[in-house]
Image (cartoon, rainbow, N blue to C red; front, side, top):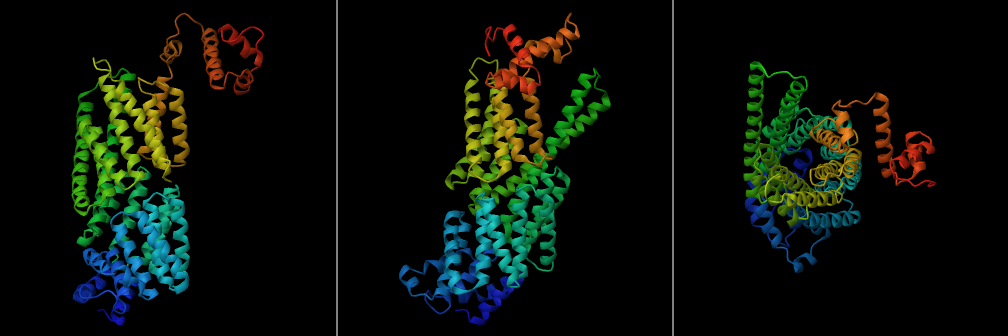
Length: 542
């Protein structure tokens, strides 16, 4: 059994974030911990303290499970309230490790209620930190931010500077999700300054990872990779942090994929310019293109290697969310490389993993990839004997479900991605519904706010371009867009265009003449005249 002095030392080291020293002590104390019996003095406190150390990197998860199993219902009823409180904290850690977020939140909420009668602010701060973390993982960002700020206020009041810094990193992440990147960076820098002299490699690595995610959002992919490399170096310092290492490997793979897509778009844009200007492809252009393509494929291969390493770690640890994220990212790269069979397989696996934990974030991302794959299969099979419409319908079903799943979270970017996906489906050659696709695109823009620098915003621009192209189904519009006007004068073309425009606006505005007139700033009389000429309005109609 650990003495009160030993428990005090362990709690002090936790508070000061001297993680290496604490882990060294725990290794020495392990025989005493293993010999503990439920019901002995301070056993609940000892188990709660051990749980906090497991959370920061001590490899004692199995020991924690073993000790908790000894606390039967009968033994719990006779525990002092302090021990019972710590026991619920330990159970929250176990639930978090198993990705049972609802169960963890239940334990933590109970702790926060009981603590009000105990007057132990340090426990309240830690419980608040863990609760906010669970809410963040569940995509409940607003509530997570509220809990974080309440706990941070308490930590500052009690002089718990290092715990306050930990909470600041969480606050930064939530602000980043709300699009406040500059404020997020400022808070991260302040937290890093407090923790820099500690060996809390988990939090320091998370800070570097957060810098990387912000750079990723801003389209600074090279900088993002540097930050992720820094986080990988920190997480590699202790074997117990391999779960965090896997996350950074997944992040850096995403950065490499975005760099590869950037190269692909650069190649396509140059080819389009040459075609429009009737310029031949010179030998130097071919050499440059070959170099860019090789670099693109190298980035994608490296990204796959990073994901394979992350996958091995997550599967060994039984981490559903991490494994699912790897599957989604791997599937996206397979789409880029044209391997639709593997993309479909990995996306399906990701959805099933998400479904086992009601992980709506993961389920939504998986459905987006599945819709993308189905759309690609539809485009591939146009003109073949088999009916490709089944792929178009599948894409539509997956995209709609992605939107529904995304809206069950508070991730604005995820919902935007789902709407982009639905828009891409609606504008394909089967549905060809540019109006509904445009509505999806507008929705995506609303959710993105000022995030208009990265790959997701480029997807919005691609969708806009496809909508514009699909909207040219009128033969006159298509001809005019190519500069073909036949024998018509400018005045005649303008008159024809007015008819097309007034008809379209009339249909979009519920076939109300007054709305069209107001929208186009023309007289209702002119609108009626055009509509009658087109046979859309009877004489004498309003």
